[in-house]
Length: 178
Image (cartoon, rainbow, N blue to C red; front, side):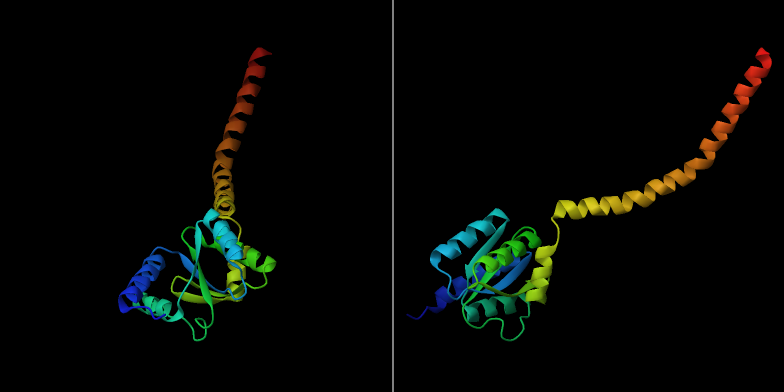
């Protein structure tokens, strides 16, 4: 059954809305997945602020063009579904990669991140990134270490001067007491 032009406009508008509200889109092939598999995957992605949508290739391509996002040739062929990252990208990428390990019928082809296309290996690299909290802790540690060394270096001469003055004061007190 053919889709009316009005329905196509609605679908493209829906895609455009999702594209504008997502941090990244992970392109997958879902051939062979059952409805139960897709439902389970959607549930897992919702837990990490993601979404999963089967798309009509030509209409999705049109929405990407309207958004000014190029997609390499051959990425929108066959049965394509998109994993949307509404929050952080690494947890969604990890959920999709982990699900693809269990369900061999799901194949990750690549991702569109910041207007750039990443291949499947790039998506795997994203999935391997530590959680945001760990990255922030590493950043704080990297900044805090040199700063504490700087403070120690700056305060060392004053501390040594105070120790010398205190030792001299104690010597004077001992001399006066004797």
